[in-house]
Length: 612
Image 1 (cartoon, rainbow, N blue to C red):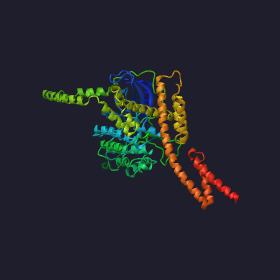
Image 2: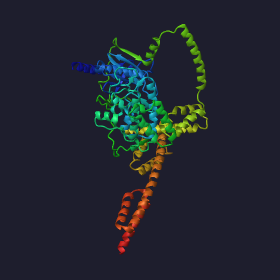
Image 3: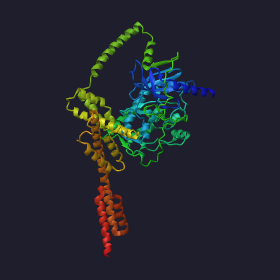
Image 4: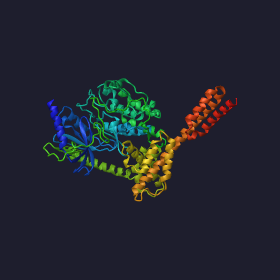
């Protein structure tokens, strides 16, 4: 008891005292969790990173530094991240210890997690889920090939950059192949809602566990709820071992059968019934996407937050086996919760270095490992010389094959992404588009590529506007952008009024003078993109509205005929049906013709009754 109190006091004093860790200046607190705290840091002086670069710094809470298992788990997380350099994995920059405090610096992702998006009311269509699944599969294949099992894959650990790139984070309980410590078979570590049956049962953990969790994540993104629901941890573990989730299409009717089949195979209770590896999963998802994709108008379905809830319970994705609850700050790996900066987080003076202070970058670690390797013998040098010569030949061939792509090759890549029909797919070729326009400005296809690039900027603006409104930061919106957001918010409840608002906005601002005499070029581009976004949204709403009206007109016409026919056999019932038509559709402009007919039949019947 006294030891715990002493550690807690040391933790508080330390947090109040430091403002630098290694080469980083400590900024605001990004989040706190059960094991550590995450701060925003800025590079002061570090050869391997640009000065001023922002990073996320995870610090092991001092009271856990000497506790059994915590230090080892934290160091194991560092060992896992040191192995991994992939575009879809949060990158480790360096690690160290200062005054007995363990910490490491990693890539700072400013965007939300998939759990943040779900909790904010975002819903993902099957194409978007497929794109996410492909990216995560490739990251997991890389992880598994480097001898690491993540073991805690969930929406909270999948972060989105501002370009909607998925980043896998939080390797705090990852297991290294061959390791016999910490998280070996029999240890229950992970998040229950996405835990594989073998984890829940304490059996041997393999990379198939990550496949099961991936299936649960894809199911949740489509359905807006976890595959299995339980009130307590023991109940959830029992369900993971034996229960089967409801079909995905029960919550997401548009889900293709092939995608549902893949998800269900990922979530097979028997690990041997899942896929041999996630590369195969990625290939099947890509094949399905290319076979089924067709142009669509948007990647996300915007759900009215005031709409009635489904029969699912609220999403709570972060309960861990030890019973602790974690919330994550946007851009911070799971295991840390939102917490604003306070006077207790950043001090007024730095600590004095001690003999134990150290900081090692990943690059320095690699160089030291190379220096510890034995020097080769003369025979080995000869073999190396032959190898170098071979590599030189291969390099020349590779150079020839890796010359800058031609205009045709670049355009084919861009056009293939455009045919998939999602902003995410198109956004992945943004670099190719800029390369095409820079190197081939006179190409006849440059105008089309420029239009694609402008579509990416417009889609990015749409996400930015929605995120600002959802996070109550709409104060930075221009009047035009505010009008757009207000119109789109009406789309679910009153699409006809939303269309009228968008039409009026375009009439007011299109081809008119700048809203401000001092408008800059950047402001003008922002205004034009908002107008283009409004035109695109108007076209989409108008098409949906016309299709809905056509369907409703057919149905209303049939009901009107039934009501008129009913008047001959059951006048009271017929009159009631005609009156109902007037009440239900009297305020709808498209139904005016039918409403007038219904009123005419009612009046005619009344007139006939009066004559008698």
